[in-house]
Image (cartoon, rainbow, N blue to C red; front, side, top):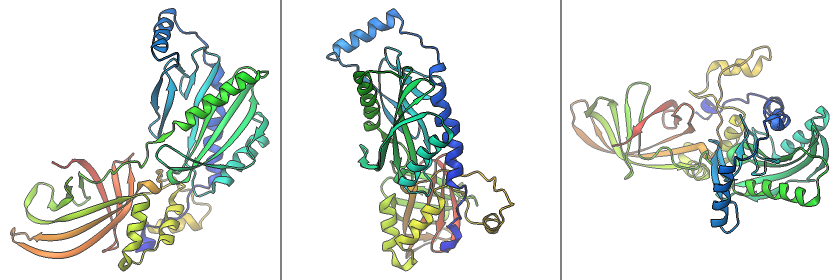
Length: 377
């Protein structure tokens, strides 16, 4: 049963990072100052100065979301086209999230070393300084992250980058501050570093930060329907359109993230240990393929000449779910009810791009796709 959904490693991390960071992070660094450097209109400047005055001389912040994460930016900043970066109010410096990428199964220290070495080998910018080691830092939601810094010159401009590595969220983020000048004074350097640090310290993750199961209705591939109520009760109907006959009802519990790992490991009758769950998670961090394991997985894993082009989706520890059903009532095709006492366990991942829960029924060792229908009425 365990092997049914422990999928093999897919895209090699070094290759993945080479593609993502060279095409997104590095190119966006190079192109930041090709954006027209236009100042604020006089009318907008007056409004902004009035707002700053009302805010005690401090430029107020607004929340900016990328879909994966969010962070604070100053109200007077202007977005750089096709990026998650912004001109400051004076239009002299650029700040923002320069790139994000899945971490994969690599360790944070290896990831940071890879980035630094890649920059040096490809001569993308003159490396001036880098942090000797990663430091631990917790986001506002208490997510453990690893932090490294890189300072350098790129295309005639000073660049300061804070690299945030979050294994729990399977993300690598680079917050950048950049100016078009190389020779900058200490005050300008301090301002750039302070603004980048403020961006990073305001970071909040939007992936795996809520319960996406409880209170929802899902459809199975066979046309059956699962209704999860907010009060912790459920009803499973053999047919979506027919709720009077052949159904199962009871209560349920939902766990996600680390609590899901703990819950599954505590249910010793299923024989799933934390170490095995961690191995499963690590094996899928480079890209998750829904719908359970298939015989062709072995061919892809053992035949280098075969190219696996199947779409993969990003998962992390916080999108792992365990749903425990406490079955209490069963109604047959005639609508006759009988009381039962039987628990069942489903485990799997939430895939937001597909709006599905990709689950495994641990009692039957069977795969199940739950497709979101809507909130349970």
